[in-house]
Length: 345
Image (spheres, rainbow, N blue to C red):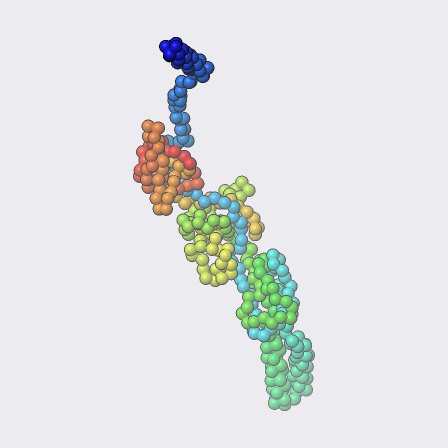
């Protein structure tokens, strides 16, 4: 009996092992197969393309160009020579044309006009008195006294007329009014205070004012200026720069003249009006047969000037020494050879 039981147990163990093995095989067949990991494809780096220009040999010109306008060469500040005067009449405004001798400003002269009229009457009476004494053949002493009375009245009359003339400011020349005081009628005017300015319109010059004053740094007196106006070509010459402004001129309008140059032009055969425009060109520097690069190829860092060049498709930096720099080109004195490829910005 025990033998039969042992045999049955053995069969059960065998059956369990077989079933377990078969189940493991079945489970393996149900699981998905592991996919094979593929290596990433190889990507070639993109080729970098640069905008380049070759170093070339040629001519370079640095010039100043712009629009200038004609202004009077000279003007005169006019003032009242006595202190304590009060403005009585202002006969002109800025930009008015005037003739020599025209009355521009009048200062209150008080009763001088009335005094002059009375003295003129007294002088005529004294003159008649002398004539009467002479015709009556009066004694010489009476005649001499009458003559002295007339002479005294004449001196006094001359003094009053001079005072009246001094109370008027008149135009010393034909021209235009470029300044009139902003003081009002009745306000006191100090002695030698500029009240009105008249400019001589018979002599004109060109004024060029720069927005960026740095462009005037290399302009010097004596430089030749090409002037173009209404199809006519003329020659001019720089006669004033911000570096050599006379003190009296600077005092009139320092902001204007600190950023301007004056150009003398031969206008003998040309009729020009104040304010008329003309195109100017000043050649500052020029050079033939020199190495050149475009201006947008130059790079700077502090005082360093350098360029980036392309050598065998490789970018390199090279320090250079520059010469003339125009609005579009740069002269290269050292650092590059003709044919080098400069990378542009």
